Length: 170
Image 1 (cartoon, rainbow, N blue to C red):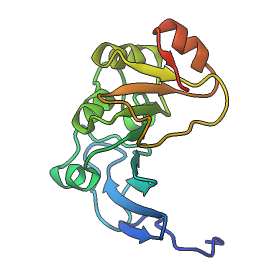
Image 2: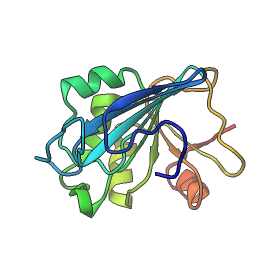
Image 3: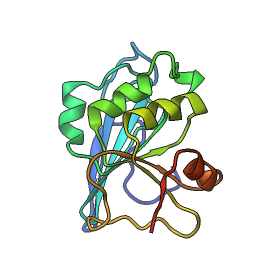
Image 4: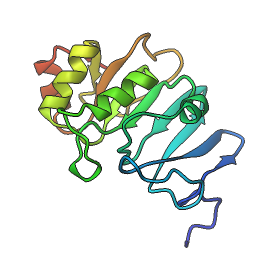
């Protein structure tokens, strides 16, 4: 409430600025939650900047994305999402996170909540991937890969890179 700028908090909508557009898309924290414009239990945030489309899925827990959600998302360069989260009933057994990613088919997947079993499933589906050893991750239309791949940054990035034979992000 103290932020003086435009906000999208617990509401569907769009903020358009000269260098960035942010669209909030109602979604469900748990399967069966109502996906209403005001007061939904989760929102997907689509950030369009520098020619890139970035989707942050928050703590999504729905089983599948709706036709409307997919239409709004369109082609995604970077998906920031979870694969394993007990609060939204997402794990390697029900494969909800994997199934959502299969619907979107982003170029890069940056994980927020995951475990070894869910990462194994993701790597089996899309064996290409990258890790960032150090420094900022600079993404642009020039270096976004074709296809879909994982992207590890932060603690454990080098270890996951070695375990899964991922390429170092340059």
